[in-house]
Image (cartoon, rainbow, N blue to C red; front, side, top):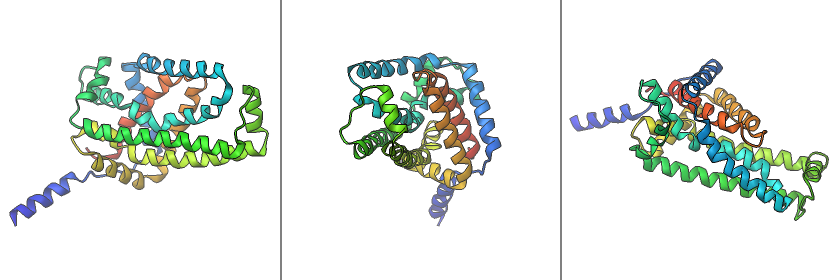
Length: 263
């Protein structure tokens, strides 16, 4: 009987309590995220990661415009892999919360986390979702335009925004992309910060994230819109703005986790 009580107590202890939050909490999480970024700016790290990607895309664009249809899916895809890319920022926010050293190289402390295998599992899953999204986007384009290759950026813009096929592409693409984004938001908004905060498995972290979203559907939808809109804005000047947007969103996600999950 005593062993049964111990098991029950441990099970109860392992179940993370979820709080209900509102838009005021989102504003506070963003304010705290900005404060974390100002305390230890990490934009240079993200610039070093973004510039090679931009360079490769521009170089490929010079060879032909057949890659243009993937431009928007790539930009939108940042919302799918962003939570994984921001994992090191959760660590910086955690360290600042505890009054620890904030030197930028602590973003790599995640490599020594006890939950490293679980983070890797989630990383592989999110990368798979990102690839699936790119395949889906390319498939939708082919269904709408066949094997058509734009002759220029202006030609591509005209076909997308001034034809019925273009608007069908926008509507269907955004609808499918929304589904991908909801899936990633649901499984990652709490799970990745939780894996850095506690030595838990991927399954429990994902289950907690799902419960957090189900307990706060409206607020999490607003958060998702904030993430997507700021990523799009940051992507406009040749993706360079992402060097600021991604760190701020990463730090803010940590504070969102702290508000939603009773620690």
